Each structure stands twice: as C-alpha cells, then as structure tokens.
Image (cartoon, rainbow, N blue to C red; front, side, top):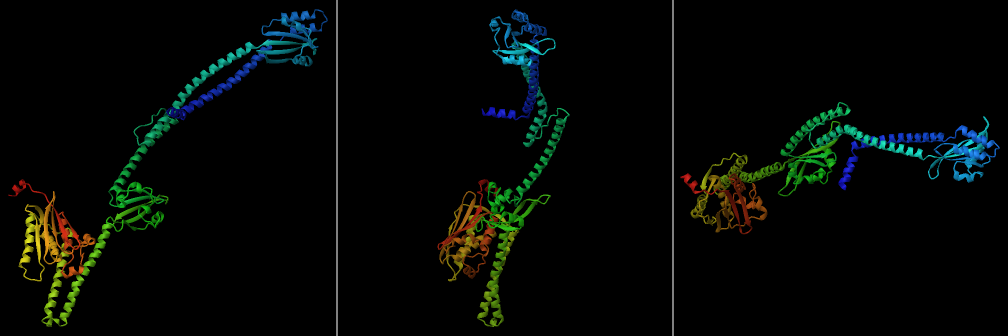
Length: 617
C-alpha cells in the first residue's frame, strides 16, 4: 500500500502528468462552457419553436371570437365543432372561455360537463382583463406548455371577448433535448479522451528532454559524466540540452582538476612530518591529517567539529583568541610522563579575495627531541663544567701551594704532586670518554666486527680479573670471588672485541667497587632462540628503584660523593649502552636495594650449523 501511494504521488508530482491534466481540464472546461451555452440556446429555441407551433391560427381565433359575439343559440355547439375540427397533434387540450370567465367549449369529450362553468384559472382571467398572451411551461405529470391567448372582436379592435386556453405536451421536445444532450455528452467524453491522449503526447514531447536533463543531472551529482542528453529538436529545449551537455563536460573537467588537487593535497597532508589542523571561521576543526592525530593520540571523530583550543588542551584560551592573535605557541601533551610530546603550533588565517576570514590553519611541529636535546645539551654542558671544575679547582689549589713554597718540603711536595697527577689522569679519562661518546653520537666510531666464541671471550676477561686478585699482595685492596656459570657450549657472536671488552670491564669494575670485601661476583651466560644474555651480579648495596632508569644517563651517579672518591667519571655506563646498542643489543639493570645489583647484556645470536663449521675449515 505504501509503495502504491509513493508511486501515485510520484506520478502526480510529474510535470508530464501535470501538463496533461491541465490541458485536459482546460479542454473539458471549454467543452462544458460551449455545451452549456449550446444546450441553453437549443432549449430556448426549441421552446420558442414549440410555442409557435401550438399557436392557434388567426382564422380560427377570429371564428371563435365571432361566435362569442353572436347571439345564436347554437353558439356553444359551433364553438365545440370549431375546437374539435382544429387539427394539431401537439395540442392535448383546448378550452374556450368568454369574457365572463365562463367555459364555452372544450376539446376533450370527457370535460363537456365543464361547459357553462366558471373557470378558476387566474392566468385566464389575467389574459381576459389585460388582453396579453401568457405562455408558461408546467410539470403536470410531465412537461406541458400552457398558452393562453386573448380573443378579440372586430377588425383592429382591442375588445377582448374571451380567451382560448391551449395545453400541449412538450415530452417530445424534451426527449429530443435529452437525446441531443446525451449525444453532446458522449461527443464531449470522446473529445476529452482524444484531448487527454493528445495532451499526454504533447506533454511527453515537451517533458522528455527535461526528464533526460534531470537524469543527467542526477548522474552528474553521483559523479558519472559519461552520458549525454539527447537533442530532439533545435528549439529552446534543444538549445537548453546543448548548453546542458556543454556544462556537463566543463563540470567533468573542473571535477577532475578539483579531485586531482584534492588528491595532491591529501597526499601532501598524509606524508607531512608535521601535523595540520584546519578550522572554520568559528575555530572548530574541519580538517586534520594523520600526523596530527598521532601527535594528539586521538581519533578523527574526537577532533572534527571540536574547538581547536579544546583539541590542543588549552583551557585558559578561547579558539577565537587563539586564531585571531596568530601567535606561535608551545603545547605540551601528557606532561611529566614517558609519552610527553612537545609541539610547536603556528597559526595562519585563510582569507578570501574580499578579505573575509573563512578559517585558519594550524601547523604542529614535533619539537620533543629538539627540546630534549637542548635540555640534554644544557645539562651536559653543566655536568661537564661541574665535573671538570672539581679536579681543576683541586689542581689549582695544590699548584698554588707548591708555588708558594710547598715544593721545598720533602714530605708534602710528593703528596701534592701525586694528587695533581691523579686529578690530571682523571680529567684525561673523562675527556677520552667524552670523545668516545662524541664519536658514537656522530656515527664516526668504526666497528671492527668479528665472530668470537662468547664463552671463551668472557672467560678470558674473567681470568684477567682473577689474576689481579691472585697477584695483588696489598692487604688493603678489596678481595672478591668470581663465580662462573657460563656453560660449555660454543656461542659464536659477531662483536668488536675491544669495545665489548671495555663494556664488560666497566661493569666488572663497578661490581668490584660496590661489592663488600670478600663478596661474590656471579657471571652467567644464557641463550634463547635468537639472543645471548650475559649477566653480572654483585652483592653490593644495590641501586634504588627510582634511579634504575637513569643509571645509563651521562654523568648520572647514584652516590656522587663515593663515585668521585673512587675516580669515576659518570660516563662508563653511558658508553657501555652506546656500544651495546651499536651491536644491535640491549643493556639493562635490575637491583634489590641492600642485596646487590645485576647488569644484563643481550646480543643478537644466530646458531651455527655443521655446514657453517665446515665452511670455516
């Protein structure tokens, strides 16, 4: 039912149907107006003709008038004879009345009893008194015409001696009128049907080009420009169709250029390393690229149509002020967390030719690394200055003391010179470490890689530390024991032996420094599917949990006073991290405060097959 109603509505909403209906209604209205006028005129003419046909002839009227004025005893008989002899098939009744309103003759034999009686018809009395004929149509179980004519005596005299009452049936007249009306109605219906057909044909001829243009417009709206409007004639509609086809081609070209520009813009926005946000004139975001979503850690529907100040997390600034001021600001997202991002936001207005501001563009540049590098550089310069100031200050004090005469004292002078030598050595080690870090940072530190059996390599390094304990006769030196859990399997790893020895030496030295006298240092070697993990554990004081993530930072010390007293530069673990990561490995630490620390070195490892062994022979 709903489909039928929808289809019916669409049919009646069609201009084709509307034109046909209007044309048909106009035709019907014209036919009806003409028909009504024609029927009315025909009816009037028929009545007038019928009225003339039943008019009593003048000779008969004179005979009746003469008889009414005579004093003959047989007057009534003579009147009845004249009336009965009058031959007119349309007349059904004739009554002759004298000027005293007395009925003198009748045409119907059944009404002879009325002769001599006075008539009660007011129209007859009026005709007798006025001398004017009366004609009217009455419906007395049928349509009849009543005609009452005055009877006058004498030539040219207006003396009314009576009236003749004529009643005639108009059934045949009205039957003819009905037949003519029915014929006219049938003809009108046929004309209406022909008119409807012609109107549909004409309206179809008019609307078909319009419908094709409508379909083509819908195709254009859907992005299909392949079809063209058919041109049926060279009239106004044909010219319109030609113009529409030309417009379609131009729109297609413009759309292709627009799509090309949009794709180019989308490609640029998608591959930009900066985030881009475009807003409308109210400051609500209308366009955002993927990089901006990554920076903001949001989905597109969480950003589109939202105020840009809210999107950037600026609570104390409105979007309008942010856009109108066009200031460059720094936005920090997730401050104080590992995911902290520092963005530099710059704004520019989008203006039309008229100068009307229709929106703005905000470009987000990630300056997190730059900011952190600047902070690191400032911290690094501060740390280097601080680390170098201490030995230089010490050197200056001892040299000044020696310069002031302490060099003459045979007991003090050697001690002062020994301190200056130690501080100088400490600065040299620090500078060498800094140079090593600088080369690794710049990527100019060369790696001399070779395949080494890591078990043998680590055993070789540990043997050296064992030898130091055995050959050192100084009782004041700290004693320690190295426990080995290396296994017997050959683990071939590609490393730079000098640099990796520096890493293990640094970790072993730290373990020895911070282990108690007589402590045990445990060295383990394990492997999984693609990595070899070397761990070095001590029994020292351990590292607080809050410091574990910072011990590989440059110049960071858990116990600064003790580290300086033992000659540390604060760069050893930072260098170890750079070397291990250059080997595509990883270094980390775990600690239980008060029980010791464990350092782990993970290096990539590929098990060698027997075929590989044969290749090396």
